[in-house]
Amino acid sequence: MKSVVTVLSSKKLKARYAKLANTRMAKLTEEAIRNGYSIACVQIEGLGTSKLLDYDVQVALEQSVPKTSVIHIWCYTDLSEFRSNKVYVAFKELKGRACAHSFSADHCRIS
Image 1 (cartoon, rainbow, N blue to C red):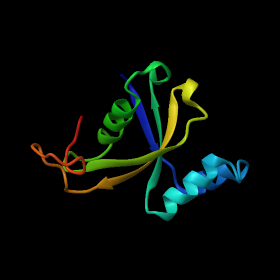
Image 2: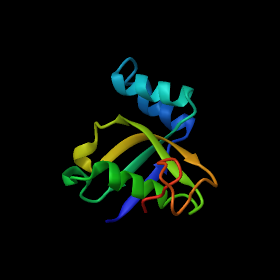
Image 3: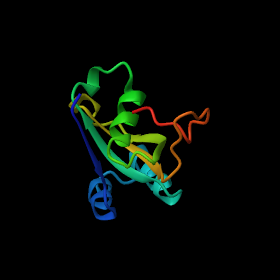
Image 4: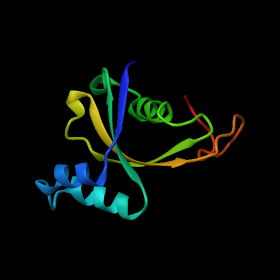
């Protein structure tokens, strides 16, 4: 599956959610940023028909960071473009925390 991950800058986030102020999407995005998460737009071919949404998004995000990092997803902040194979997700990159044989989700890569 081909995927494109774009981490949104503050400027892009403001432009996108200015017209959506007071919506659940804007509130979730604001809360995520306040809690130190980044927001990414993840576009994956066939995402709209995926039965493994969490897995597909996790793998796409992990492919955009070094192998020593782990991605922690907090929530999907915006599913308004799901049918167009795009989702917006709040995530943190945990640098240098990847471990091949870990039982903790914060240390295990799935990609």
